[in-house]
Image (cartoon, rainbow, N blue to C red):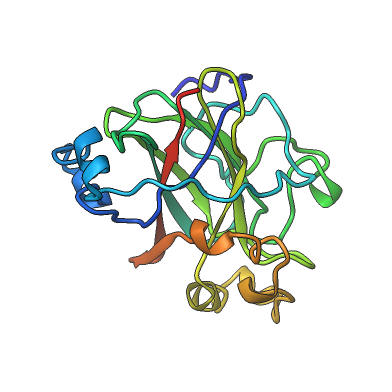
Length: 229
């Protein structure tokens, strides 16, 4: 992927349920959208629900690189992020949406800020969705920093406007396991968990990713519903 820059801003909302009715992640991976049209929505077979908006936070940098691998060689347990984007009205996959993510590195540092000031690009990037609505990222399991639970910031760009900004979260039990290995063991006793995070308490449960171990890496999956504008 050419590391060109994407400057338009967009929207993010989350589908209610990771496998809502006939439109589960497995169905998207198989390339099937049967039962996911307006009739299915009207009948209640599929339910698309907008997630509560969450803060962008102080660490966003515009004009991020369009690329899949955002690690820039920094240490950390590999994480594959699989973000699906669907139309919240019809529950059908949206092709060519731009998914924009940024998060702290394994040491809890954001590029462009504090200890990461000399670099403005690590752990930041944008990917466009394919015909199945899927955007893939290669990154590392995020580290923690004081006052926040572990999270990934995300926007979805559609038609040049932002209708929602969100954050994606990890189950605490998975994070506990991930942090038992280096380099995370150099920073024991993270200060904040999901239940005590002020942002997570405001709708974060609806942005909790499904995370599984794959060898020595992790795979995180989320499904998001957006308005086309």
